[in-house]
Image 1 (tube, helix red, strand yellow):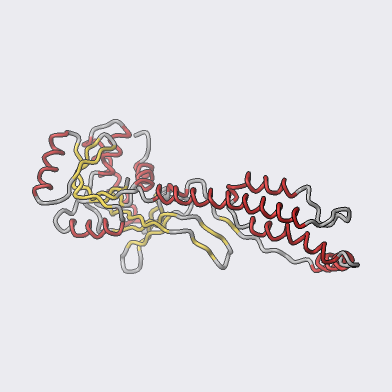
Image 2 (cartoon, one colour):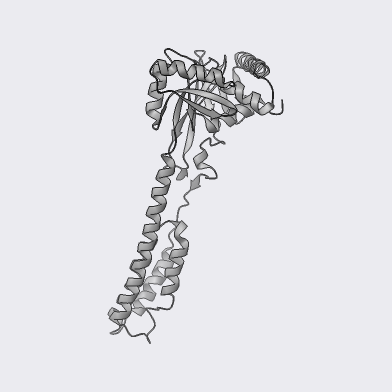
Length: 317
């Protein structure tokens, strides 16, 4: 083989929510949102939580078909390879009480003879989080000396009859800048333009005479720029929501190489009043009982179907 069975299991976990090793057990993936650790002040990106179920031992054809396609061998050859791998890891876990599968996780035998699985945290199987890393927030140490110096300098500025005019000019810039800080970093070009527009306006220059028209025009320019940034943010958020909602979940009854066999299964499911369909992929024709836009509804339906067909499994596209 060009690659190990562990490598192909790891690849499938990126694309599927359930991957079964026949006669050993199955991995079930659950989507997990971003996590904030209040102790370490670290923010982890969205990920997949991988759980191991010893009851999922029935061959669903997914792993064997994937190995056959990637290695360019027959289904029978791939089946033998998976059987040898399954026997090997079962024997090793029983004998040594510990087993590690590369990029997947660690298995140990508990005191009651149960299998305990710990996921490998170095791999994030959520494709939507590709390239994202854990962010650690660094604490800021306050320098009291700098604050005292600033306060002293501020007192020197606040002298004479110009105090109210100076404060008014400073507020015209500080307030819009505070609003700008809440926008996404992806809008840097727009924000930079606003900064450039303000660069020529120095609120502390004594030679500048405050004019209500100048302040009004500055505020108008800032307001227009902020509205443009807000509108662009809203468009990006709507487009993102549209992309997320396009995932579909299929409950697969079987996978076939020959079209006539797939159509035979499709006709049988339609006769049983299922909303059946054909799903193409990986050089195979998969026959689906039904498709769902919501993952929770798909899992509920899958649990009911498994009472009649234990080999049924969930495909996410």
